[in-house]
Length: 413
View 1 (cartoon, rainbow, N blue to C red):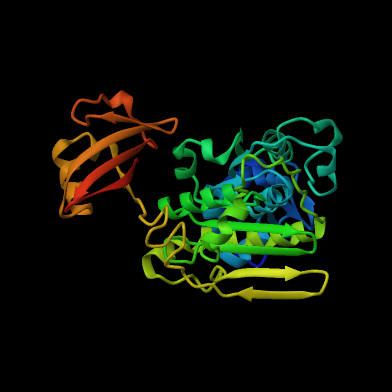
View 2: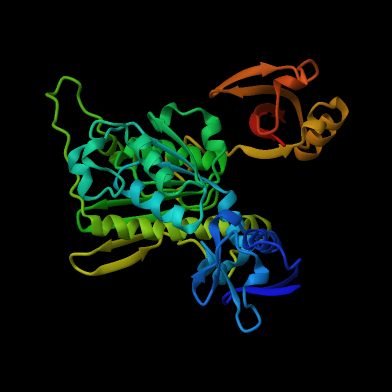
């Protein structure tokens, strides 16, 4: 029995199936052919969902057309099944589970991101509820990251979320290395400085956003060649921004940032679209140095807006050779190359050495460290047991190139 079904405006498929199978089995066959998730799909006729246990032989199909109602069907029109699958496989680190973090998590989830790491050290306050959609009165005093993760998972059971209550500076390096992209909504300059350094050093794209009352900004950073977030900041401004002061002075009450749900929603929406551009096009950009026309190029500069005076602009930036992060003497001036090596190659002394010499010509004195909860532990690859390393583990490698020692990160696959 031949049955034709379609995702409207995307694709039509025809399958040959036995007439006695159920709607559930038909759905399974169709979803497998289209490479979409069965549990996020319904089959419809005239807009009405078919009963899963119903036999298709009992359905009058000659004059009717089966519609495949898929959760992200409207997005498939824009970037197809492969693009949507790429979003679903990506992991995003959300830095800050506050106002922007709440909205960004919601938007990214609805876009199709399925893997998150949410990090925040703060706890929920009643004043948060006017602009943080996932928090309730009963959440007051609870860790923001864990509440946000729980609420997201309650609504979207298909998500894979890791919630961390703590400071970004204390995270194991592996947490960052596991992330395809970082979305930041921090109001702390010192943490933004740290995050920018991590992004630059380990080549992890970062989309940053912030608001102050009616004013808001968004900036995308694709390392290593883009101007980073710290490029516009002079060394003279740095002390004031991180709060450096005379320790003998009287303590200053922490100033609260004016905040509106309107600017927060606007910023997080633009951040999410920028994240989509990067996740969908980064692989192509690395190969061709061009962003796909289908999804667009990430913004070049800082997008700023003032909703009070209806002003919107994109401020162009130039790299600052004296930048404290990416400049010639910056904290993250040297980037760390990241490579994947199969466990089969790594455990073979000859294959490993041949591969590393190819990847790092004119280099020697390779020293290996296993990353364990952020701490490097030196290992001898010729002596380590196979059970001690697994697919997905990260190894830090130091090597000598000419007279200089450099670092690289190996991920076992």
